[in-house]
Length: 293
View 1 (cartoon, rainbow, N blue to C red):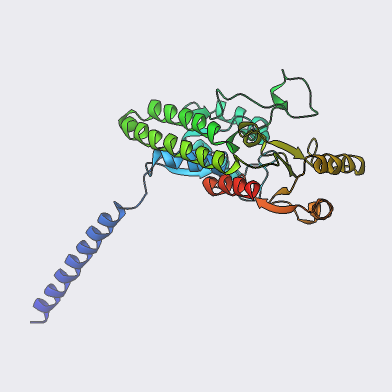
View 2 (view 1 turned 135 degrees about the horizontal axis):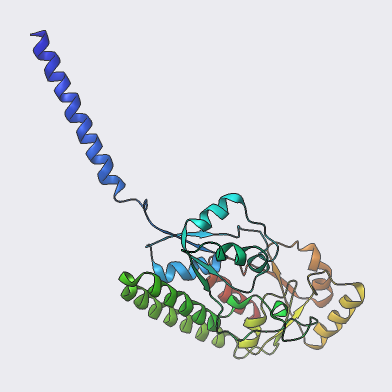
């Protein structure tokens, strides 16, 4: 009798273990485990990539929040992530890309390396060298909805080449993304249509492409990556007065103290922006709203 009970209990435990194992395997099938990795340089590229690729890939971002993509140093863990990725999407204009990543990706034979800014017309940095030197171009190409359409097109074409099975999905998503960029572009133009003051002041010159595409003038406090001298500050205040500047954009990485004095002198409003945010739509529309008030 005892032996029979023991055999029954043993059989029950075995069946229970099998059921739990089956449930575990079934649940594992609904998780993102097993997805291939794609690595991108900055958060706005993750926004574009996820818009085009959907949830087909795990997207890793190299530049963490608050870090400068001009000077950021990669960690060993990030280098491992990069080597394990099927695709790496670089903006192609950022300091840490040219300083660290170009040679690294050349040593990874299996990776698709994509320059997202290919085909864009560059802006040249004021006060730098000749226009034949690509180092002197404004790297912030993603701050324009018009540019973002080209960036997305480059990413979509690369995805279609790498993953032909999902080509139809990528093309479908690209179409919707392009329409969305057109909608944002139209909203920005409408907000800025009757704005009398076409100039704005910014600490770090990150909105040059936005200014170019909407007939605005960007005046930068920072010059060649350095804080303004007293002499430059005096010239800028004079220029801002002549242009009736009423808005000063400050990236969230900088302290308000760096622009508070000039804001008081100009009676201008300080607006904190984050061009490196994943929430790209909100940032672009908030910039336009600030200028339209």
